[in-house]
Image (cartoon, rainbow, N blue to C red; front, side):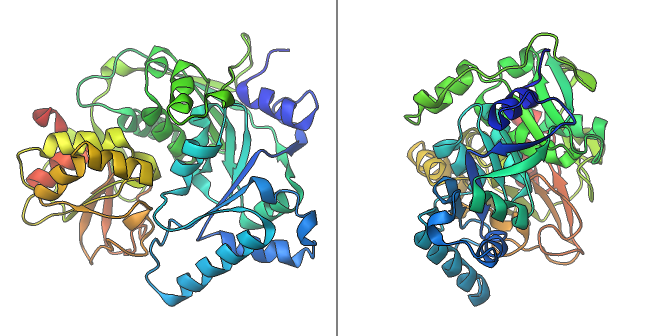
Length: 419
C-alpha cells in the first residue's frame, strides 16, 4: 500500500508496516534541546536513576544555549552551567552562546533526509525542510528519548499542500506560509503532518522551505515535510555533508486526509495581525500602521537570504528616527557570511542594530522587550499576547522585505515599492 513521507519514515524507524493512526515505538536519530527546556529534561533523566553508560541517546543529543545568549541574569546562567556540565558528563554535544539558534544549527550540522528527530521545542518541525520527520515534545518525553534512544509515536495523518505558479515580486515563502495558516486556522491541522508539493515548492530554495516547515506548528501540525531533491543535496553539499543525502518522497497513490491547493500567482504580501498567527491580512489592509520596533531574525527568518533582502532595501536609506531596527543572524555561519558580503555594514550604516546569533527578542527575555503600547513588526513565527515580553504590546508578523520597508517609513509598508 502506498505511503506518505511520514508513514515511510515511521515504518523504517519502527521496523513495522506503519500507517496513519498506528502506534509505534521508533528509533530516534537526533535529539535537540535548548536552554529554556533542557534543565527540566535533564532533571527527569537523572530522576530515572540511569547510570551514565546506560543513557543510550546521549551520543545523538545536542544541547544549545540560544534563548538567552548571552545570559541576562544569574538564574539563567546557572541553568546554562547545569546543561553544560550534564552534556560533558554523558558525552552529549553542547553548543555555547553565539553558535546560533538550535533549529538553524541542527539543519546546518546534523539532520539528514529520512531522519527521525525530536526536540524539546515546538519549532523542531523546521527540519522537515530536509525531508526528516522532526517534531517537538515535552521535556519529560524528550528525557525518555535521551535515556533510551527511542520513544513511542502515533503516526499522523497527512495533509497534502499543493502550490503551483510563480511567487510575484515582493512575495516570499513567509507570505505563502502565513496565507496557508490563515486558510487552515491555528488548530486546523492539529497532530497532522503537512506535505508540501507543486512547482512553486520544487523551485523554492532551502531558506524558504525552512521558513515554511518552521511554521507548520502554527496551524497545529506535528510536522511540515518536503521531499528531498537537488535543492536538499546542494544544501548538504555546501556544508560537506552530501553523504547524508538520500531521496525521500511519498509513494504515488499515497492517501491524504485532506488536500489544499494554492495558486502562487495570486498571492500578495501579507501580515499576521495581533494576537494570532492565523489573523492574516494583506499588507494593503494595515498599511500605514505606526511601528516602534522592527525585528528581523529568529529560526523563521534569520537566514542569509533574509538578511540580504533587508540590506538590499536599506542600501542608501535610513531607518526612521522613531523606529528601532534589530537584526539577528540565526547562526555563526550566517553572521560571518553576512558580514563578509557587507550586509551587516549596510544595516548598521542605515541605523539598524545587529545582535549576536540567537533567538533575541522573540521569546521576550532580553535584547528588545517592548514597552507598553508599542507595536513591533517582526519576522518571527508567533505574535501571541506577551510573546516579546510585554502583554501590553502588539506584534505583527511579516516577511523580511515587509519588515525592512516598514523600518524605513516607520509604519507598516508594502515592500514592492522598494524592490
